[in-house]
Length: 431
Image (cartoon, rainbow, N blue to C red; front, top):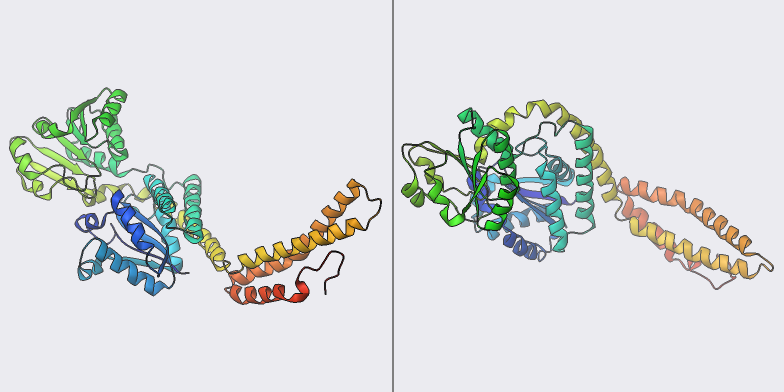
């Protein structure tokens, strides 16, 4: 299959690299416009999350498509190819299809079986669809992989006790402080990851949570739901540095929201401060970690906690992979039949045209036939034709699955283009 995946993810690259190739909303619009200009790229879906930046594409030729996507990354983010080369991962054909399935169910996530990724994959596909970047191949692949992911989550324990990045972050903090009940926390950002973190903090007994966001209205909405929350204007976020013990930051800002030059002015050097940055690109300037009494933890440092929670779901992952293999084969069979589907449609259309003419001709010559008789004739004749073409359609599909579809399609099309199979006038026979 001419399906490929080219990208950079948490398996093969540090956060310092991943944040450089993260697609913002504006980036996505520009990226899809460019991708549609390339002759080698027929369809594309970009999946950009805190752990990955990947492009799934249906291409004219695998090698050409891989070369094009690699150069696209280099050009789009203005990073020399020699710098990026060691971090690229590439999947092609059947492996690429399985990768998308595994991605949707959370088998390729930092947290095995995480629930958020299925929504991210669905959203990525819908956005590509909205931008006109996809077609029948990737639309079918993504619909099937999302359906399969839901099936796996229902039928296995892959998501049992599953934790999101935000939950892992809170657990990480809990492991460091042991007890969070007397801690004050500043949460920067009010997106889904921040909301999950807030709920976990409240569950752990934190009673004083300051929330700040560029759009203050969203923070106020949260404060109306949780009595533990106090809203702080974004411009005043540094004022709380001396007060809080913990900061969790998760915004979509393309730049740092906590900078060293400001932290140095407000930080109490006698008090320990723990900062967990779960944003990509990062929210916290890395140099802050060098400041006295401040400890900054990023996404990659949450891996140990994630691994500790992974063992219980490993057996379920094996069952999930069995389902994925089965579904991937079904997709490949569908893909192999692309050349015969138009022929099948033509076969159905042609036989219907012939049938309709013959029925009309027959009914015209049946004097005294009642409406009931005519209806019965139509039912019997339609049933007969369906039985006649059932075997040829089955053979065409089997030929497609055996990768002989193009040959069978060519022969069948030639057969139906012959004059003796063209529609005659009413009442005339077919040679």
